[in-house]
Length: 97
Image 1 (cartoon, one colour):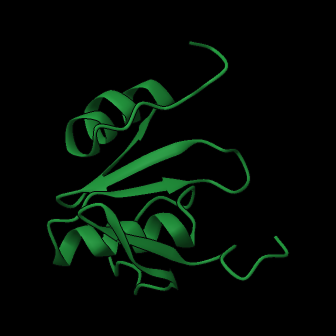
Image 2 (image 1 turned 90 degrees about the vertical axis):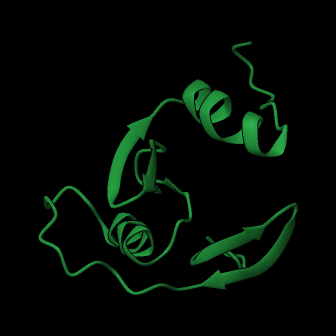
């Protein structure tokens, strides 16, 4: 919480970081109250682009993915196999492997 890049989004284009610590407008749709500012911004991005947005809750550490005006919770393994490995060849190094 004490670093400059703590809040805001990181935009990755291809294999490069294009921008860090940026903010997006949240959706104007009426989402359930359980969704905070990060989730609302991710949903907003999915409304205006074809981006896949990964959101990690600061409070719970749970992961959500927003894409094509849809947001869903995913496990770390699902994040790896559905999004990171196919697009970037990234395999997460976790203690549970």
